[in-house]
Amino acid sequence: MATLRRLREAPRHLMVCEKSNFGHEKSRHKHLVETHYHNYRVSFLVPECGMLSKELKNLVMEIGPYYSVKNLPLHELVTHEFIHTFVKKGSFSALTYNTSIDEDNTAALLPNGKLILSLNKDTYEETGLQGHPSRYSGRKTMKFIVSIDLVDLSANLDSKKYERVSWSFKEKNPLKFDFLLAWHHTGAEESTMMSYFSKYQIQEHQPKVSLSTVRELQCPVLQSSSLAGEPEEACSALELFDWLGAVFCHADLDNQPYNFISTYRCPQPSTVVAQACLCTVTGFILPEKINVLLEQLCHYFDEPKLAPWLTLSVQGFADSPVSWRENEHGFQKGGEHLYNFVIFSNQDYWLQMAVGANDDCPP
Image (tube, rainbow, N blue to C red; front, side):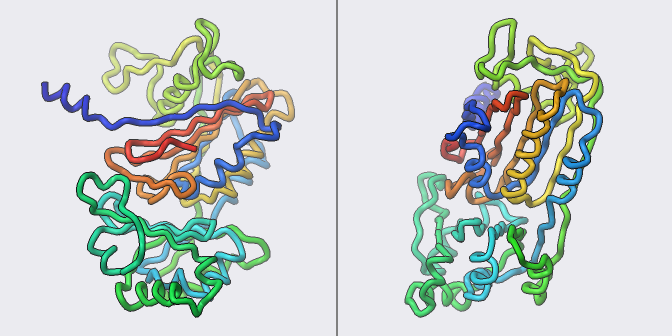
């Protein structure tokens, strides 16, 4: 009975699947990548490929940099100088790390200039700022969400609103966080970030890149026109999604009776490819970089290839206060928010978007 009770309490998950073509004028692929702001891991799998092209490998190696800064006062992100230097001259992202979204105060600066704060009840009341209860607080509200538009705020530095926000962060409740920072810009020096925050403990990082070749990989057969699959002809999008998770975990796919770790089996029908290239990039990765990578992967089929499809998967930070756009995100028992492209040789694609228990339905 205890086991049955735990199964019933398992958190629900949501996944949305859609299909389109990259050449379609109403394709949403760029917008959905651009509005998934805080990306932790990017992976792509290319069947029938033993080595990445020079162009693709160079692109992967040039995804960074990003930065970490310790004990950064929140008021530094609302100064006119910061907003003018970074927010108005590019796409700036910031996210607190070493924090738990369900328990701690967290903050995120979105590329659209919105500063999102997820605060516990005491801190929220101390700041004196206007916000709203978290959707995932339960019966007793213990978390509050505050959203501040920095571009709008900086338009009038003499306004009472700007004075209140500045006073709250600098004097009333001088919050400090460890942040991850990244900036997409044109025409500015990379050293700008390091010099601007030089009085704090700031470090530059390059994303970690892992390249591997998977031998004799059993792959599901797919038809780009059929998300639901076809009996004995093609696997569904959901079956592909599960299979891809097993591949990324390096699980065995043959369900051997002596295997006590994994009983998973590749969905049918399937085919065995001699080799597949698996590349994983881990860090604080901007949406602009992912869009460039996605475009390059689409060009993979400009010349005839043995592979009928490839995949690009992106995972968001589990403790980010948002998932897509400004949709509130919570952790509960998983914290996942991710998406996956299946790119077909005819430029059709499947897009799979998944979230956990404390999230709205993906856009």
